[in-house]
Image (cartoon, rainbow, N blue to C red; front, side, top):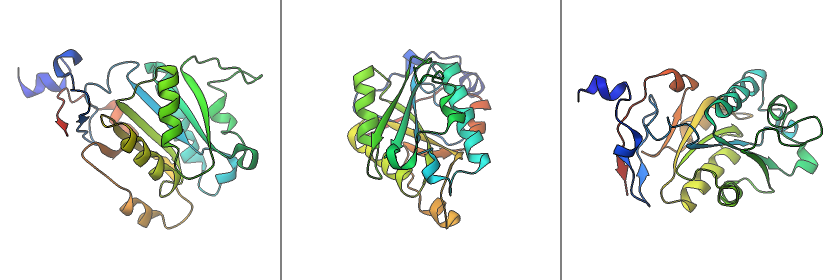
Length: 212
């Protein structure tokens, strides 16, 4: 099997099963074979609420909407993480309209909302995944502020799930000041990467490596 064959995704996911408790090493430029399987990812959108509008410009909001549409096409689970919605409002209607009807009933059956009152939402995301049977190996995370709630949510997921790997989407993340400094300090690991949304248009990298 040539490298070009691997890039075309010819090898089935079952050939690259990852042992429990081991994380998949991610490449920021390509999806791993596990991520590329329909229904195999949990998308968490963090604090996309009016209370944080100082960090949510139109480009960020539109990019988050594209991630929701992608998740729905791929059958991913979607978790809306809201920080004290009684103070900061609900997730923006531009995003919620794809998941809920006008009465607030879910019309996409793999979505839920969790509420937090501190920066980190990792515990709430994991609790929802376990309660509803959402994927616990591959996560995709978007939202604000990238140097506060997003960062702490990502680290919380990785701390609680030994086998988790997380991909963040740059276009759908933002903060309210010191943007370059926030990006420079954002944590990365072999199993925590920041990608452009264009990663979904690239060939799948159909090899899975793992780290303890």
